[in-house]
Amino acid sequence: MKRLVAILSTILFLCSCNSSTTDAISDAVDIADGVPQKDINLSQVGVNCFFNDSQFGSISAQFNEVRNTLGRRYVRVLFAWNDAVQPSPSANPNFSFYDEIVNAVPEGTDILVVLTDVPNWMSNPANWIGNNPRTTFAERWVRSVVTRYGSSSRIIGWEIWNEPNMLGRRDNQIMQVDSSPVNFVELVAKANSVAKQLAPGKFVLNGATTSINQNYPGTINYNEDMRDAGIVSFIDVYNIHYYGRQFENVVRPGGVQDFLNSVDRRIWITESGAQGVSKQREYAEQVWPFLNDKVNKIDRIYYYQMFEPTPSESTYGLRNLSSVSDLYVLLRGS
Image (cartoon, rainbow, N blue to C red):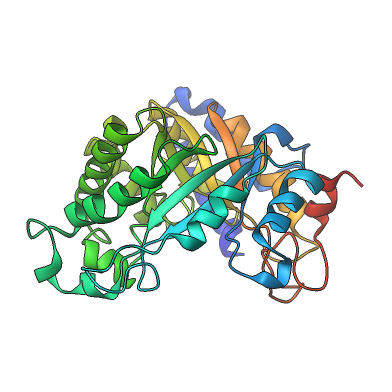
């Protein structure tokens, strides 16, 4: 009922506007009637795969299932800067797990590397370079990772951070980005400078906010503030997350559609998905074609996520420990 009220409110608002909003009114009416399922553009689809659960096999086995069973060529992976990697400021980073991932990438697959998180010692400002945690992240983590892996043909690019606007998260608080889009743009700018110096041929993406269509208008406002602070100058691809539906927040004036079409970069959706092994295909066939219809420059959509050891009714995983989802079956082709 709340969602229907929101949709009808959007329609009434649009109807109060001038004749230039005719198409948007039509969109809102269509949403009230129900967004249809359509075929997915499979060439866009990649997956998130973090390789941190051996219950699903070795890193190589998981990659092979992604590439050979599901035919997915785009994989988003996580290179977290945490205590396990660098337990003290004087310790050399332990790259053994990330080496395994990079070395296992199959032929014909590329990985997008998410650089995020901070070890506990970053809580102490005395450990920051130039009294700035964002400079420290760029110099201590981005530089280390890109120096080690920048020449790898398996890596297509670097995603700088993840969901910077999420309040109450320790890493966002340390980096001072949770309520400051300007600080987040500074973080991406510093990381971009390092990454392009060391590996100029790799893409740089901003870390996406929480789902751009949700928590309206807070999340879209954070994105707009990033744009206005110059984020586009420091990225090759603009990155978003999209969960839930909230289609009314896509078509409303100043909503997701207007914002993304104002950004002078191609768009990647690096997280999108639904819970439940019988709900994922319906979600993908409804949401992704709708977004492609409204935003004309979406190149990739990474499903979240490939493997997850959670119950079938609540899992985001294309495969959990007991079953595969309906979307897995579609991607598999049988």
